[in-house]
Structures are given as C-alpha cells and as structure tokens.
Length: 505
Image 1 (cartoon, rainbow, N blue to C red):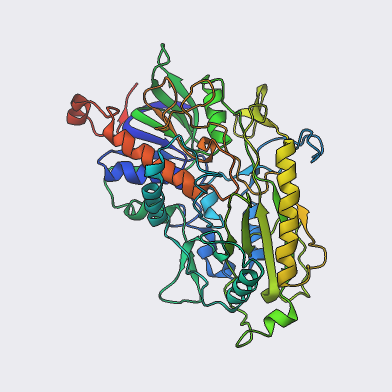
Image 2: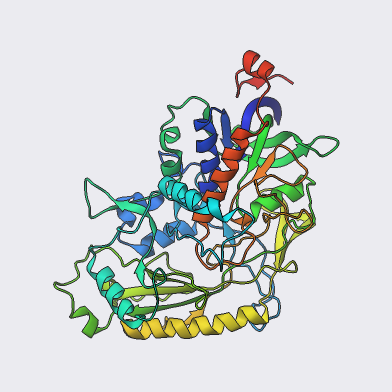
C-alpha cells in the first residue's frame, strides 16, 4: 500500500450532521477543511436524505427495506436481554458507514432538551437558547410540516383534549422537524440531510473544503508527550493507499461508538472513555385511528395525506419524550397488507436512563471488526429508578393510545429492543472534571490541545428527547471556540503551502 502525506488546516473525521456543522462553521470562518468518511457517497449531493426520492416519500416499508441494508452491527451477539436490572444486550446497535451517516435516513425530529431534566449545565444556561436557535436554522427545523394534514389535525386535537391538564409549554403540540414541504410540489417533503447543513459546500464550489468518501481514519498519532496530535492515519479504500494527514486542528465526530473506538485504537484512553453510556428505553405501539375520530374529519383522508407529527415534550412530572407519527418500521413491527395505512399511527415514548460509570463500552484487545478496528461490546443495565420511570411511561403510552383508537393487532404496547432508537450517548462525555469526563466544556479532549470531539457521545446527562439538535448546538459552540483559539496554521505554512497538496515523504 502506498503512503503519502497531506497537510491541511483542519481534519474532520465523520461526515454526519455534527461533522458537517464543524466543517461549515470553520470554512465560513476562513479555515481550510478536509472531511473524511469511511463509507461511500450515496447520492449526487453529498449526504442528501435518501427519503427525498419520490419512491420513498409515501412508503415507510419500502424506505425501511432500503435502509436496513445500510446498517452495520456494532457488536457480536451477546446474552439475551434482561429488563429486570441485570445486564442488557445492546446487540441492536448499528452504525451507518456513508457520507451523511445516519442523516441519510434519520427521522428529522429536533426538539430542544428540557432545561432542567435533560440539559447539561456544563455549558452556561445563558448560551443555550442562542445555540439552539442557530442549530435550528442550520437544520431547517420547523413545526409546520404537516399542519394541514387531516390525520395530523385529528391526532393533535384528540390528544390535546386528553391531556388538557398539561401546562404550556409542555402540552400537546406539533413535533419540531428538520424538513419542509417542497415549494414546487407541496405533496412532497424535502428532508434535511448533511447537504442541507453544508449549504454551498455541498455544491463543490467553495474554496477551502474537500470531502473524501471511502477514507477511513484508523489512528490518531499523538506527539511523544501526548499534548497534541501530530498526524492522522487514513486508509483510502478506493485507491488502496495510506495517507498521513497533518493538521493544526483535528475534529472527530463519527458517532457515540465509533469515536471512542478510534480513540482507543489510537492509544488515547482517558479514564471515562466509553463509560457513562446512556440509551433511551422506548415503549412502542401502533394504533388504528378510531371510527369516531375519523368521522370528525371534514373530508376523507387522501392516499397522499402527510403523516401526523405530534409531540408531548419532556417535563419534570413526565420525564419522557412522546412522538406520535410514522417512521421507519422496527424489525419486529407488524405490517399487514390488509390494513389501511392511512389510519395507522406510531406511538413512541422515549425514556431516560441515568448515566453511571458501570454502563460502558468494552474494547477487544485481539478481535477486530469488519473495518479492522478493535471490536466493541457493551455492558449496560437499568437502575431501579430507570425501571420505575419505564413503568410510569408505559402507563402513559396506554393512556394516549386509548384516546386515538384500537391497537393494530400484533403491535400492542411493548418495550422495544435496547439501542433500536440509535440514541446512544455519554461515551465521550463533556464535563468540568477530567476524571469523570473525556472533553472539556469547549469539546476539547482533556490534555490534548488540538483534538476536539463532537456528537451524541458528548452529551453527559440522562436524556429522553432526540439528541441531534443538542449535538449540533454543542458543535457550533466548539467550532466558534476553535476559530477564537490559537489552533490555526502557522503564518509560514499559510504563506508557502496550499492545504490539501500531497507532500512527498
């Protein structure tokens, strides 16, 4: 395999929403950025949401079949799950190796985390609102996606009546979605993908940005004293060569599992790496909208009616996040061709699990995964408090379902397999103490001056709401901090070298 050396201002490892946020912000701030992803580019625009294709706009089942082929298991099968507080299998955890990562097929749900129940106080409270607003703009978050859909209005009104006691702003309301109706054809939706976040960078017309597919970062090489990263080792799978990429700043944002995996493979192993892992317990069922409810509609539900997108936010008394919508079918979801899909509604209640150091990733010292990286495993259990909240959450799910209609046969309320939500967090957590966290409040790895991390793994708290908006907000804060910091290329290198040019070894 050939070896070559590249020098750049910033190397971003991972091309999901968080990596794209770093890239867009840093390029806008005048930095030259190289972004790499181990997977291929699946669309003409880098990281576009695959559901933007007409064939998948109104077929969850067809889209689900497409996406299942893009999901790679993160660990080998382990013992059967045990929800009684013993070790729980996280074998349903998967990763998407592709430009755009999970944003090529994500649901697009982007709520803000509750300021007391979920949000971390490591970042000053005064900053969160502005960070969230900027993140919502970047992701094109809105609440009007399905406001005129018949099924949406039926579900919204029925649940608002059922939960009339909930105070503002925690009552029944439209679900914040990173998507919008197309102006040229309002029957269709344009879902936010990484191409949305990259903006002009996705068009390939911006100087100072290059995106390389099928480029896998296998190792970060620290300086002898460990105070900084000297270069990154990247395998170009398309051309079968190894690149040594030297940068002033390194950003690793390749997911809550693959990010700590890369650090471990690089010999960078702070005490909390892979620990304090959290994942959201999920209660799920499907209902058929009741006849009495459907009769309230002013007109019949058309075949291309957009799905409902309804939300009951987390609150102190109700520490779970409620989504009433349609989404990718779970592996064990019932699909009956005789059922009128216009009347099917999914209820997903997301709970929270308190972060504890014994909930952790394991890294094999000998076994390798399909990508040649240390094989990972998981040790995870629910505390007594976690399980008590789950039981309350399940009772609330049943209450909501009863207000909408009968259960779809075979899809009665149940807890789904852990990690199917794909919301693992906490594995490279942010904090103010290097003994119990991996990065500082600026997202910089403790003790390493030029290495920053991003993604759901940084979230240090128990959360029930979808994590992407919060992770993008944290990435924005970190990227602006990088622009203010001294982590920049030297004046000599700027004067004499062009970033991205191969330098002979």
